[in-house]
Image (cartoon, rainbow, N blue to C red):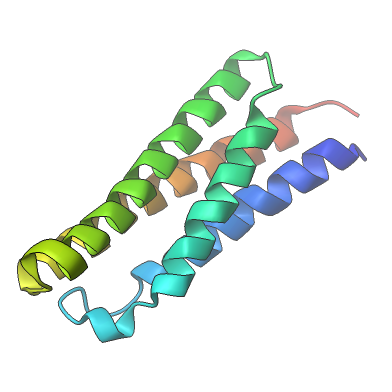
Length: 125
């Protein structure tokens, strides 16, 4: 058992589950989506990205790319939330954009988990 892989897998899966927790709910009702959960998803995604930085394999590069996509999507989601909250006001269009961006990040997280699982299954003992 490689401790680095355990920690990396832990944060990859934690990022996915936290992002799903934020994404799940009616996409037009902001009250069903916690800003704290979005913040946690951003932090866990950033930590998962840092753990992927040292991997020099081809699949490691793809894992890093998916993680960077998720980071950008989640940070964009938080930026849209702040812009909606303090500049234009929260309306349905803003709320749907926030949730859609987190949905894109969730797809990147799912791809990351699939690749991580495939790499783990493929690795020899």
